[in-house]
Length: 283
Image 1 (spheres, rainbow, N blue to C red):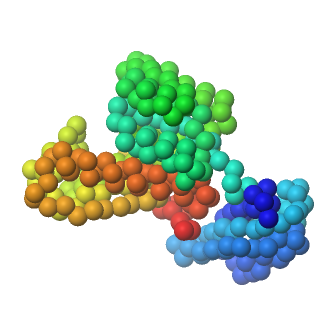
Image 2: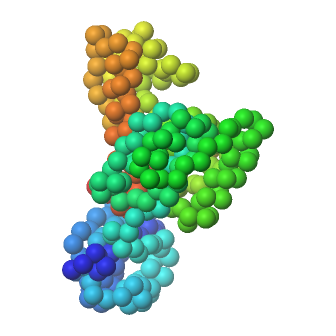
Image 3: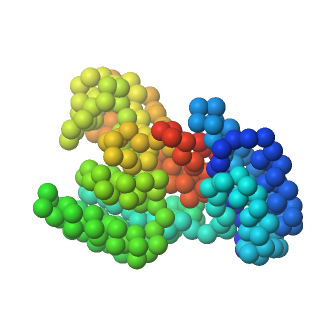
């Protein structure tokens, strides 16, 4: 079947017996062939999560009609979408271009199913990079006085482009609690992960001075608790004493790019579910 007949269905509800049977029966009633199905029952929260893909010649209206009595009975949060529809994504950045470049390259190459209508930055440095990929770029200086205006512009772009995901691609500003709440569950951040957790302007030099053995990166949802949001993806690579600060930085940036892109990919494919302070990921 064509992409127009390939759907992804996600469901989250309180757990109880018979959910898989009921949902599968509704898909069959819509003349759907289930090609992928994954589910998880969370013992901590008592929530049930399900993601399935189905092929059917039925219309969206017909599929939704078949599902309606089931999801109503389950009191479920659910979403039905075409598998190949790109996720509308707004990227926030500052000066570092490695994560932005990776997102734009993989979008262009067809390996990342997102659509980036514009990039918003607090510095002009990455304007040429955005232009190379043919993506609109805005920059506005952010100070304590202008920060509310910048964040208001973020929300304007979210509304204007019907944005589904906001990606902080090394955007070096802390979002206000109000913006965090407005973007809850649809904003992803990336940061380096060391043990110990080095902070400040030059974490890789600190890492070199302390002789770290592992460099990693963590992609997580943005919350009002700084760098404490539910984790989507993590990666790590082993290093040793021979690595200079510049080499550590290059290695770390590779991990940041890889980790952020994978988190965005999982989100765009509707494989990420929030379960309280953690995530359920269907790979």
